[in-house]
Length: 391
Ligand SMILES: *Cc1c(COP(=O)(O)O)cnc(C)c1O
Image (cartoon, rainbow, N blue to C red; front, side):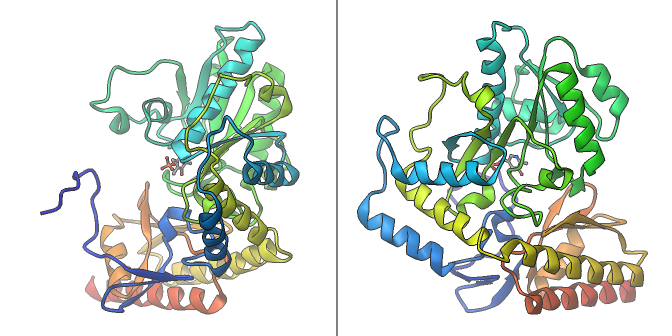
């Protein structure tokens, strides 16, 4: 009997080793891992450069309080601001802490302007921003808040794609709009560039802040460092996590100079956030992702993967409804519940994970190679063939 609480529905499978795109069981059975910790292991398992970075730092210094200067964190913050819209960074340890911090920054910004009542955050109904009390209330999902009352105020919601409702829900009390440019848990729903551009315009007109949650779709996952870059816009606040640590827990909130001014000493903090051990890994991840040709390789692999997946879709139009996604955050939407399909893929040694709307999420490491993509395509094709024969 496990002593762990039962809050996860776990597959009856465990691993004791990983290398690149692959996971191995204790008995040496090899799986192609296109979950990668849900877009966390951005550079695959046991990446030699990350192993080197963490080993080196672990012998020097693990943790010091944020009441001291942490050079490794200064360095990572500089890398993040040099490559993005942001001027300032606060480090956290997870995605939900990053989205919480994003909400705090937005509210504190208007507070600092003397507009205490401008504190409401407008989000997409049934979105996902993490599991803390604030984040589940931000999601606007009945299921996520069930049993965790009282309801936390300060959040409004509009339906995905309902622009009239979005505009109607912006009031004088709205501080920010917070959305995922590519909804991960929500079923790999890509917000089109024209939409993001329009959102930016609305936020400018109403003088409110735009928070883009890049926890899942950021850090090169989309083929650009941030997925909103495709729309050529600049957000005000961006929470990140997952891929930035390559498997080590790191979260952060990135912000413009304008809003960062509100975050004066004492307004926010984290004991672990930004410690030397975490930061040394984050620095190594950034160095890999910004190596010449890395992101263009993500894009070309993505193009190939999507076009081949569409060929399979066209071959099995009664099974696969749609191929979704950008870069290497991909979704295969089925006509029916995806549980059985995911199990069949797993039996054939390909690991994937579900998302909403009958979607199977495909999240290879960003440094996946074409040969590995071909292995996955072959397995997906084989499972489709099996499905057809069963019906
Ligand atoms: C995973 C995720 C979170 C929460 O991250 P945790 O590290 O699990 O707290 C928040 N927002 C988005 C978009 C995510 O995908």
